Amino acid sequence: MGAKIVKAELMGNEEQAAKLRQELKQMRQDKQAQDANPATRAGPREEEVVVLTRTDKSGNTRPVQMNEAAEPKGGRRKKKKVATHGASGDRERYFADDDRFSLQDMVRMERMNTAEDYDAMFSRLASKGASKTDSDNFTLDDHFVTAAATKLTPAQAEERERHKAIAEHKRLSEQLSKCRFCFENTDLKKHLIIAIGIQTYLALPLHQSLTDGHCLIVPMQHSLATTLIDEDVHDEIKIFKKGLTKMFEEMDRDVVFLETCRSLKRQNHMIVECVPIPKEDGDMAPIYFKKAIMEADVEWAQNKRLIDTRDKTLRSSIPRGLPFFHVEFGLDGGFAHIIEDEELFPQYFGKEIIGGMLDLDPYRWRKPRTESFQEHKTKVLQFAEWWKPYDWTQRIDRSKKS
Image (tube, rainbow, N blue to C red):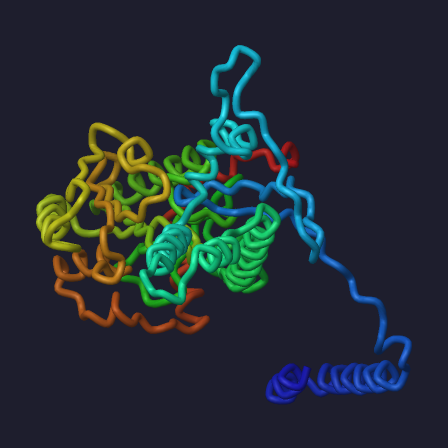
């Protein structure tokens, strides 16, 4: 409010400044009255009810199942006897919890395991080996006591799973609140949006563009990668790609689409960058990118270093949940690369190759400067004029959209 008052005074609008001063005075009086009233200060807190979920290694989210009853604290628990043989005398089970999980449950548990879970399992196995000692003071009773103390009960395992789900929910909520690409976020720079589709939108970058016409195709909902989005979102992105390719062809320029998916745990918003380049450079772009991808990342890779997506699409070439880099040359397909070591693979990998082809300054992709509002306005008006004949979003019937 104080900033608005100063701005009104600088603009010479004394009437607006006086009105804002009166509003600020009223807000201060309301705040003092609220602090003085103990009933309003100690009001009831609103509780947030959420469904706890866990995200597996492939990016799939599933609700956490809480089926186990809470165990009584304290006292001695009596071990239940379980019949291991059937009426015919054949063995049907070996342990008490053999009938607890189905094959589908075991597959789900295996997919939900993370690297931290395997490290914890390795620590437990190492501790079991360390507990087996030939010391004279270590008796068989001590061994049983140690094994019982280190074993997790079903209730303890369920509680640990619940704490993990709560921590993941808090981390995801914090990331979503800070994401400036989600369409419903207040931090979204709406003045940079060129066109709004049903599931995606076309916008210009906040920082300095790599080339004239540099733009972004962004899903409205928080999505992580092309391999994890729904089919309708993927189809809408392809429509934007077709329009942009045709637009830049009329301007005698080629277009390169870039997508880098790194650090899936950080839940970064998916962005497809569209970078137009001159025709003569566009003919050599596949050679530059192929050589750079073959030399990128670790020396000894576990996956195929270069994946050709000209015959198969990206979604059928890269497994779900793997970090990757994808470059597409217009509508002719391109190359994909599964990132082995994310620390060795920079986020600006694709833009660095284009910058090297065009002899641009390194700051344009390493540390691009944030442009002013006037520069944004000029850039948006120019791009909107280019895009107007190809704007398919104007034909969308918004009244049918729920």
